[in-house]
Length: 234
Ligand code: GLU
Image: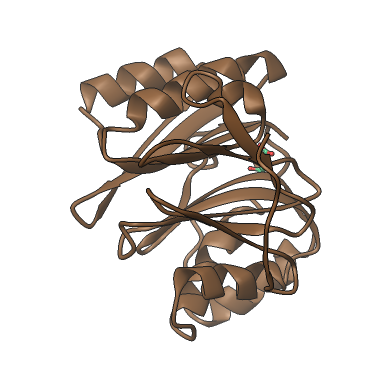
């Protein structure tokens, strides 16, 4: 279980995501990746090995955007390869995940029967496809993520971005830590407060089962029953 950083801002968030990942390097990891969205399109960048290799790729590919998610992976399901590195994508949705989805195999079979094609050996890829499937049945990204996580057994900290929702990010946790960082006109999330110290001094620790919607000017938190809740900033 390694690291997650997510950001929604007016400015390019790639330097923020990479700096956050660098501050999580002490935890150990085998690969890294990020996804940003800009003008309705998702841009992905992944690298096996160090965050420095990912940084070089983002510079080379001129990856930039005002909303994004990033990850350092410690492989539990599938080899250490670029295909297995996060984020994992399903059409318009990209996901990063720390932890293990224990019942992924049965959900994977179900999604395959619906026509979803899997390109990795990870448990995580079912999260992306299930959220995409739920988006077809629900009226918001938040509702789709709520419906998807209700199906999972195991542990997850996750961050989700949807190219058709350029003004919000969704994060969720169960059995893996996740903290929100509050800014002015920008908001953040990470698996460890260390990733956020260069962008904010104000953090909110999510509790087990919480799902949060981050917009540039507001953060809303819901408990596992879908009730809006307040969590004290620190
Ligand atoms: N189980 C996922 C994988 O193997 C996530 C591992 C992690 O926590 O980094 O890709």
